Amino acid sequence: ILLCCLATWLASGCGGPLLRADGIASGAGFVKDAVQGTRFTHIVYIAEGPNPQSPVWVYIEGDGVPWIGETIPSVDPTPRTLVALSLMLRGPRPAVFLGRPCYFGMAAQAPCEPVWWTHRRFSEDVVASMVAAYRKLAADRGWAGRPVNLVGFSGGGTLATLMAARLAGACALITVASPLDIDEWAASRGYSP
Image (cartoon, rainbow, N blue to C red; front, side, top):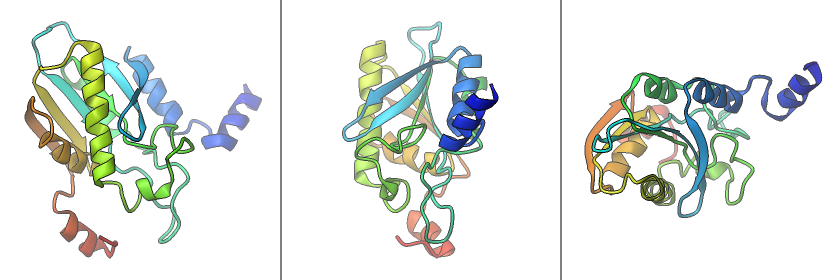
């Protein structure tokens, strides 16, 4: 066990964010899958629901750890604190936790590189890939055409807002601590636009 933990720690930190997310999702009975978006593969956790007519709840996590210093991007942006996943644990079903591009163990997969979780985290490519991933998942699970309720924490709320405009079935949008005026948010923190 010690060697396994040591190997895991060397790769991502013992009990790292991906292991925590997998553990939380597995403990709740969620199904883990990988869904292809336009450019990126997205990790998802799925919770089926009893009512085939109810809305699908889509949860999107915050920015996590895009930077480890003022000018040094992190190797893995996966959040250490999983607020959106915790919200999904308590929320209605069916639900899906839709992983952002390059998060949850995907940072080393092509075409991932730090620009996608730093300067381009809300870019057209990221939003289009998330929308495509949700549409594919919805088609595969028989959710196509159902109402969609989007829930996002922090930067995940920004992405949920951008996605809502592109999903015909979007009927509710809930953001928690989300920077919705990106220009003001970047200027207030001294970030590049």
